[in-house]
Amino acid sequence: MTAQRDYEIFEAGDVTLQSGTVFPALKLAYKTYGTLSAARDNVILYPTSFSAQHTDIEWLIGPDGVLDPTRYFVIIPNLFGNGLSSSPSNTPGSFPEVSYHDAIAVQHRLLTERFGISKLALVYGWSMGGMQAYHWAALHPDMVARAAVVCGSARCAPYNHVFLESVKAALSTDPAFRDGRFVERPVAGYRAMGRVYAGWAMSHGFYRDEVWREAGFTSLEDYLTRAWDATFARRDANDLLAQIGIWQRGDISRCAAFAGDLDRALAAIKAHMLLLPGATDRYFDLRDNEDELGKLVNARSAVLHPIPSLHGHRAGNPINNPRDQAFIKAEIAELLRK
Image (cartoon, rainbow, N blue to C red; front, side, top):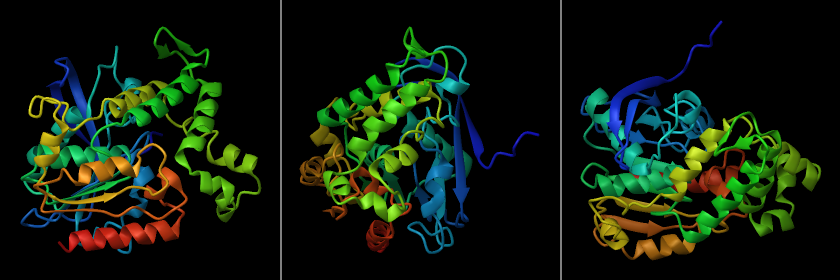
């Protein structure tokens, strides 16, 4: 018996991508939480992060959570390449180069065509979701009232790009990678990718102070084995490569409207902006947000509040981390009061 899906599909039709390629029958998977108000003004858009599907990030939606569905209508659009929306794993033939700009264009169509939404109370995102939130604020400044960029940035920094090169190398060294794609599951590649990711995702202090013990792991090897070795094996390897490409090309100014001028793109933003970098994040470095902050010259407000945590990049997705979760919840509550 086929399991009943818990999400909806927006059939976008044949879409001309930013690259000029036509993507036939493009699909956007999404899920909603809560009730859309009569005025359609209580909407929170919550895009997915790297390799995540809506079920991986919906934990923070709840009456006592960071995003309250009793007050807001929360929409999670699944990013292309995550296995639910159009991805290499569910698309016949070769998968074209897709960008955040393409994703936001189709998400915008979902909001306007399916729901008649013209205003967003908040766009909230972590990591790749945070980069999408930044793109939304720049590309639709009159639509976005608030944006929370959690461990994200306006563009993929060179250091971040190099981190992703190491991830790609670890995964594609597997013999299952042939002629530019995976022809079977790269068992060794998944494990190698997880081990590389473990070093980058968490901080020096996290390992120095053996913070992993708080989650019940008995040794460093136990933590690496159970927390990281199989983390990415749940996803199709070609899907992972597609999303890494989106991440590496990420840049809010990389479009005709801004012609690669990041200062101009940041100056286009009018929303209340909340930048929540992880104080110990190793690839979304808070210094990038510091640089961006001074260029948000037309934002209604712009604040940068680093998450004071040893959890590195994962401070922004504190599913089993009550301290960081409380910090983010308080920051979002304050943002929504503006």
